[in-house]
Length: 471
Ligand SMILES: Cc1cc2nc3c(=O)[nH]c(=O)nc-3n(C[C@H](O)[C@H](O)[C@H](O)COP(=O)(O)OP(=O)(O)OC[C@H]3O[C@@H](n4cnc5c(N)ncnc54)[C@H](O)[C@@H]3O)c2cc1C
Ligand SMILES: NC(=O)c1ccc[n+]([C@@H]2O[C@H](COP(=O)([O-])OP(=O)(O)OC[C@H]3O[C@@H](n4cnc5c(N)ncnc54)[C@H](O)[C@@H]3O)[C@@H](O)[C@H]2O)c1
Image (cartoon, protein in one colour):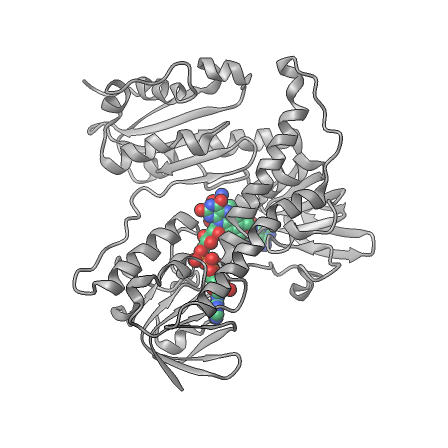
């Protein structure tokens, strides 16, 4: 048995905890997979590097409406792939060697670990580790849905026709055709990437519309746009998957009971991610779990045991958070770090205004309540929308689908929700996040500053001005 002052499980956001302020502590870092976790290796960063290449191809294909007749001569998938992983893979290996070789107080265990007692871990190699304090940053993993013919072991295996986001970006060749199963973030982003690069795209989703957790107006507009580029099948219950040497077949049942069969070269599973506290056997440590598999924590990121916060075990990121987002995991990691350093003055996580963006086409960004949520909460609110096509920069873009939708509290004038579909949505939403976070009301935001003319944020200025607020 080896004892440490601190054990960190997981090197995604968990990797940022230990800095020189921990030099006096003996630390173990345990990582069963790639160093740097999901965001760096299989998530945010590679996907967005692929999205950028997709945008370039799409812009070239769409250029004639600006009077520029460009065309895509070819897409060099291996070069696109190497651009991405040629940058990422060295960061993974440098991070691993820095932690493993250059920090005398840190020991890296490159293996799976499980709790085998309240404050005891056992690694896959049989080493028993104990510690004064633990940080659980074990993330989440791909859900393989329970479908007839779908073998979880075959997903992402060499030569397999069936992939998840863990492996699809490393395919040897660009598939000629692809079926994406799911209607959420990963489905929307990956369908955009592959279709823009030339793959014939079919999307099969269990519900309707696509991105149904967005504000309904955004989800419906996005679904209309998606139908123009992809073969979209909604309210489709996938019942069977078959693979052969030349491709994959998917059967789905519609609401009326009719069964349809789709065929493609490749199937991408994008039906959600499950927190990994179960495989860590958090139950053996007496840690409370939510019904959806998340580890239960308080506002200071301390895990709960029998409903009581534990001072010596913290959790952060996908393993416990209601938001599977990297900026949230990073925020929670900073909170955990502060609470490890100064346990007498605990810092709380701030989950008031968590924004998100879907890097699909058109791009989507949102923060705060959807109109359905505001309605269901019984809020008294005003709502306004403004089209990209109604501001000068929208004319420059020839945009016909983009819009901004804002919700504000009728009495206080504070913004309570912001939803954007259109080019650069993830960038132009930032002043709205700032206004909400710092309590700037909608009228003051609209009138109390210059808005650069004729820049795209004028679409936000106009939506703010349309909010029917008193005063
Ligand atoms: C395709 C994709 C695209 C995404 N794009 C975005 C985006 O654009 N923006 C955004 O905000 N978020 C995005 N996300 C979500 C984001 O990647 C995650 O929310 C974030 O990476 C979670 O960080 P984490 O530190 O909680 O977990 P992770 O980064 O997953 O780290 C957990 C680590 O723990 C290790 N581990 C788990 N269990 C054990 C164990 N028992 N023993 C040892 N090691 C263990 C794992 O191997 C892993 O490396 C994306 C996710 C995916 C899949
Ligand atoms: N840009 C970003 O911030 C970004 C990008 C990618 C992923 N992520 C994060 O990663 C998480 C996982 O992404 P995701 O797209 O896998 O999950 P998701 O929760 O966004 O979407 C899952 C989709 O799969 C469908 N589904 C679930 N089970 C199904 C089944 N058996 N058959 C058919 N459809 C089924 C759901 O209805 C839903 O449409 C996201 O929730 C998000 O938090 C974020």
